[in-house]
Amino acid sequence: MEIFRAPIGTHDVLPPDSGWWERALGSFAQLARRAGFGLLLSPLFEDVAVFDRGIGATSDVATKEMYVFEDRGGRRLALRPEGTASVVRAFVQHRPVVPWKVWYATPAFRYERPQAGRYRQHHQVGVEALGSGDPALDVEVIALAARFYEVLGLRRVRLLINSMGHPECRAAYVAVLAAYLGEHAAELCDEHRERFAESPLRVLDCKRPACVAVTERGPQLPDHLCAACREHFAAVRVGLESIGIVSSLAPRLVRGFDYYTRTTFEFVSDALAGAQNAIGGGGRYDGLAEQLGGPATAGVGFGSGLERLRLAWEAEGNADSAQRVDVFVVDTTGGAHATVLADQLRQAGLAVERAFDQRSMKAQMRLADRSGAAVAVLVGPTEAAQGSVTIRDLRGAAEGAQVTVPASELVATVRERATER
Ligand code: HAM
Image 1: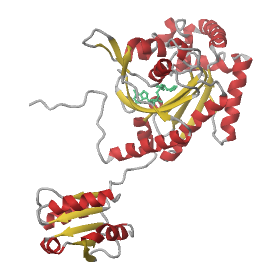
Image 2: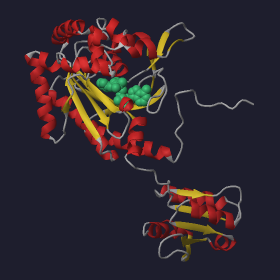
Image 3: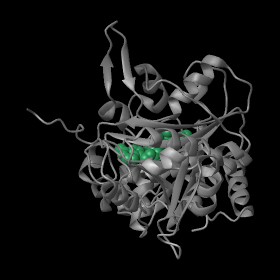
Image 4: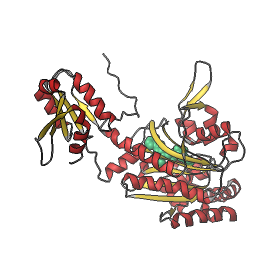
């Protein structure tokens, strides 16, 4: 029989690895809640036009990477390649009171060439805030990302920041850039020598040394911002500084989606290899709601790839410790007592394991040891007849010590001994 494997570019996350994911998601949810963001759940697929209009029909992601399909009713749908367009679609549909601040945790699908840190299904946590153009909101969003990385224990993280301006000042800059690239076309990489005029900004994003050399010397976006955009950008940087968040100006940072306006940023991990070192990114998208048929509404947000965060965390020398339980219940009378005791202890808030399949006392004790539990609760024929339980310390100075108490004292005794580690 054929053995099926997860599709290329996708992966399963099993315990104990998934323990890190649980903690990361929990930390993110907590930080988001503290900053006033509520959880948004929305469909994994949308009308393909939501993404075409949202991220830009000519963007690499829309043209080469989107999972587009027709459903049985003949609708053209796409799996979400990112989180922002769907959030803004939901905003336009429901017209909630602004500022509207939501967070999400979602898989995202991109048909990319799989490699370490680049997958066809990856997972993002992110936030989006709609309805205010205040630079303080940019700061709040960026700070949430920075504090999240701190809570995860990442230290080798840098924040790169830029401003793309609003559409008019950006258009003026693009014209200047296109003229400059035209003068230096012969020096550009093979791809951009012929095609720079289609999307001059994309050349800024090109990692090939030829393009880097030309664009480094060329006109820089921040020097071409209008007064209002310049003021906004300065306010964001001052705000970040006021809370001790260090950012470096990255004048050639242009992100891959068409919706960005003004502030754009990326967090990179110096523990990861160059091409996949972005652990999170985002920015403003003040025209996106309108683009999706809604009222003109400012917006700002970010998304962060959990796989990359995990890789960065490992690359910084961290490792999972095995998941431990507090208590292991050993029942040599057939297992029915273990069912009742495990349930009682779990209801009391303890992490409890037990054996199945009527294993021998010796086999159950071996499992108890391996489980990392601090104490074992033992029930044999004597305890069963007396209505008692025996509680044995499995670790520490008192290892091997045990007491037999009435079953009514189970939870209190276990709690006392399991927390004395
Ligand atoms: P993005 O930069 O395309 O932005 O993705 C955000 C993060 O997702 C990246 O920094 C990276 O950590 C992770 N990521 C992206 N693609 C992959 C992949 N193929 N494999 C593994 N990880 C990946 C967005 O998606 C925007 N929606 C962010 C945003 C929110 N902008 C405003 N609001």
